[in-house]
Length: 283
Image 1: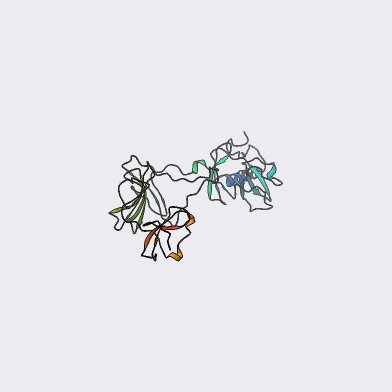
Image 2 (image 1 turned 90 degrees about the horizontal axis):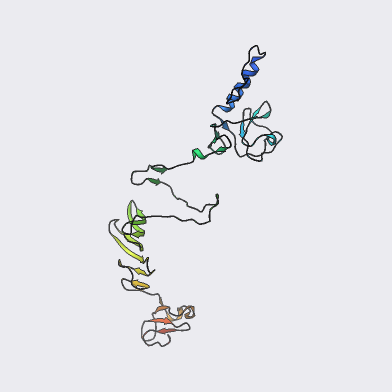
């Protein structure tokens, strides 16, 4: 056997002349293969020149005087003014300088699979996670977007799942670590928006029934009609000269502040504004 079985290093043979050539060749290969670092694994066009000892992983379709005849995934080493092909070995790890990534040669191709993040107990971005807040992110902004790489469906959905109707699945907004607003399913399966002045006591501002789609405003109980308001309702006030177009839709209601005989509620019949008191046209 004249070469090593794994890294293909040349052996010095008995009575071999100019043994230093064989040793130097082995040293060059070790220099390239030990703690492998490559310039790029995506550059597809052979550069006209490179630094002595520069190493590249050849992507599919690589072109150039020498690269075009080399094997996809091979290591291209620049030495003595030209590129030399070196075959990687299974289990070899390379650092890719232009991306800052690590790749593993699995015997057939280079892959980042072993270095991809996997399940962890806690994860922090610019902050320390805790036993309660297992995922902690400290940043001015966070972005969740649709998958344009795989590619995905174009949808982007965030799922918050609770164990049972009586539990909570919500997004809580805080001011100086004290809760001020909460949106979600809070102790039931209806959608709620609730607010707080002290972070301890919350008031329901809006509740949408999961079963009927009815909307309740300012009341804790489930709404019993399409719009169930727990208190007085105020509509927009207009002078007669500033009334919106009644043709915008029948059923609109406004407050006319300067109607003859005094301010009055008025409704649109689809063509004109009429006083709710006697159905007479406004003005």
